[in-house]
Image (cartoon, rainbow, N blue to C red; front, side):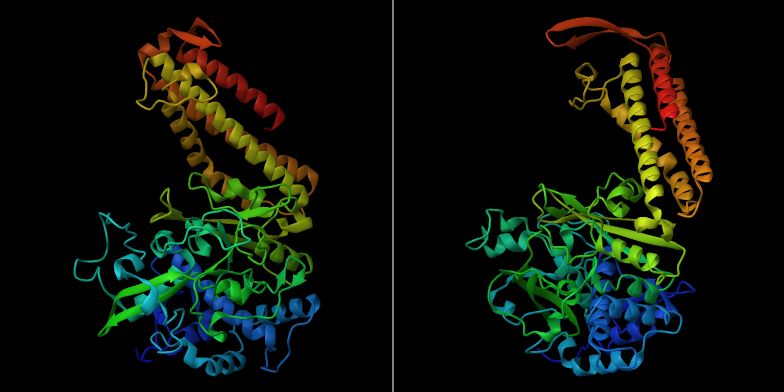
Amino acid sequence: MSSDFNLLDEPWILVIDKNGEVAELSLKEVLLKAHNYVSLAGESPAQDVAILRLLIAVVHTVFYRMDENGNDSELEDEEEALDRWKELWDRRKSGLPGSPIEEYLNEWHGRFNLFDEKYPFYQAPEAEKRGTLYSVAKLNGQILQSGNKLRIFSNRTEETRNSLTFEEAARWLVYLQGFDDNACTQATGIDKHPTGMDDEKVSAQVGWLGNLGIIYAVGDSLLETIILNLTFLRYSELYDYPSPCWENNPESEGYHYTTPDNIPELFTTQSRRICLIKNGDCVTNYREYVGVLLKKEDIFTEPMTIWKKVQKSKYSPQPHDPSKKLWRDFSSLVVEQNRIPGVVYWLGDLKKKCYLTSDAICFASVSVLYDEKRFSVKDIISDSLYFHASLLGNLGKVWQKLIEDQIKLCDNIAEQLRLLGNRVCLASGRRSSKKEKREFPEFDDSIVEGKRAKEQFYFRIDNEFRRWLVSLRAEQESVERDDLCNKWNETAIRIARELGSKLVEEAGFVALTGQWIDVKRGNQINKEYYSAPKAYNIFNAELKKLSKRGG
């Protein structure tokens, strides 16, 4: 190995400028010029998140230890952390202070060599001897292949599928440390946790980011995005002293567990021991085995995830549901009675204390979906959500409850559309081929039609709800709040009636006349009459009830 590709000097991070042009910059250039670019522009949203966390780790380390003038000034309390953050936020148009960043990166310059013999970046030399050998086709997240099945459509040719440029390899290396699938743990032959741990299978351990329902704030520029997610506080406490991976010697022993207490350590966690193998001017293979593992429960150092209560007082990261848009998780995202993401709490605190001057704020979500055994990646999902920053924290508590109520209204309406679809399907005599039941056993195979009606409703209201959400402000008086809620109620009911009417109109003559169907309830079988008009009358009556009580 040689030290001929240093990530601080060589361009490898993809960014997009304000004219829509994509550029490739070194890590140092990205940090010093981030205010001139809109966002990262890598090969996938998951890769962008992994690289964003790397950038944040550097900025967090530098400005936890130094002030904007480059003087040694370690943060000691909450007030200092908020003031330091505000100093950086005020520079979001002109750029981060260059002197402290360059001084820090120059000090650790050698640790950013991709092929260094002793300290290869994000790698461990020991993996060359101990790791399982893989083709770079598995490293390349654009191909997203399992061990025996390739993507039908790929932007890689047969010749380039099995090689990556150094720039590509660097980007996917950062991605792999966060999102690697579970095949590595199987190949390493690990079965259970060390003594003293519970019996959860280590085989369930994908890379740390693969466990998360990732949520992060998005600014008008890449620099704003970095600073908005620069959480110096863990809820209300100062994070511990920063310890990024490049300041520590790569460990050669097998896997071990840790609970990071600072952002840079967490954001640069080496979940795999990896060694890239190059051939000339490209990377053709790599070796890896299991590295640092994190127990999922209660790692509140992590600020970028939705949480789910798994026991009475324990929380675990909750991946995003691919069938749900982000706004439907508003409660988990914003309402403080739940365990909300650390970055959301942080921004709410900044807004309450008048450090954050932005009005509208955007949150983006990313999750990687794996197959059932988590041996390969199936898909990557992403979404975003805009709303007024005043809705965060205690300032927006009244609106938070009202928004929850309106989302519940949408869910109840969607359920009525599902039942309408099921009843119309029964009335028409049509059946799906899938044997599945819901709360009405008599529906048997009719559920596909109902599920489709429910999905169409969520699709139709998606943009409408987002526009409604953007119109809300914490300072609005009760009369205006009631008016806005009533307008949304009317919008949701109107769309549902349109979909319900269309469903009945397209049901066909058999459904209009209806038919008697044997219905089993308990131990008895009775005949019940199903028709499209009867189903629509039931649906319409339920909508009136929902409309009156607002959900």
